[in-house]
Image (tube, rainbow, N blue to C red):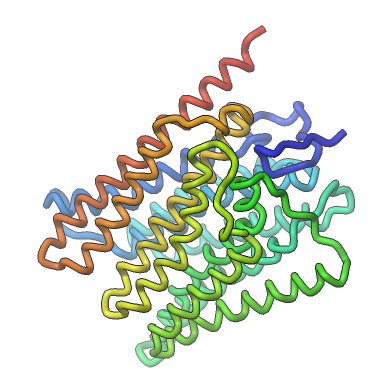
Length: 406
């Protein structure tokens, strides 16, 4: 028997109850861990702005946010969603342990400037995640296939690996090849998660916003054409990074935003606003629009492009991760009715994250008040994660108590 749920993302058989809960529902561990790593990546900026820490660490910040915080949310989602979508087994014990340990090790090694070790830990996580996904997608016993947009997922992981390799190559080959380092950094910090947004967004965005579940991939001519279009879009996205690294940032940023917007309009259906109840749905939809909007801002002001990029990172990636994480938690920790509710923590969290985004953009437009905006932005972001954690903990603890009742 198959279980169908408009509130969830799957329509396959539930994992067996014999599997421990921490493996059946990986999001319960990965999402809180991701929020903690977000604190690791942002708190030191606040301490620096308050003159309590003498230096700031931009490399550590980017690694902690992308390869720690964001990677935990991506892993927790995929470890939970793929088995339920395909009707295959949950992650094994060793996959869970690698998934939980690698982001922490990656972040800790980056803090101590052991960048080679940091990237080795992260590559171990990518390899684990890739093998987990491919095995279940190609399993003969899979009850369902992923939608066509999931073609982006292996391409996104490959983009991250390529970015890490190019960073190492640029450093090893010397000053004349530093453009390879720049290209690799763009692929790693932007390309990988843009690919994940395009891939997962093609399934999650229409489902969360309107309850429209995308069909499984099939062997029809239409599906072949759709997958080919996704592959072409992925190639076009990769070329935008080469254009930027080659010395034309405005063109690269503008084209990047256009490619992502086209994919999210076609696969994510973001031209249509949410129609289901639940405050988090509107913020998931808004976060999708923030990504092309951020690239448009960066292209319009190339000398202050970091302002636009932080619209992408904070208003796009971070807000999407937190709100999709809320949807998963509310749907499966509290049930469909909880996902249709309007707890005050949702607009509080989203409002704080969006205010943090605005504050971080002002860092680049009002350099005279650099520390004011940096400190305010950091504090607002951390407060947003507290509101998120408050609601998440409440739902998970209530669900646990409910299951324990005789």
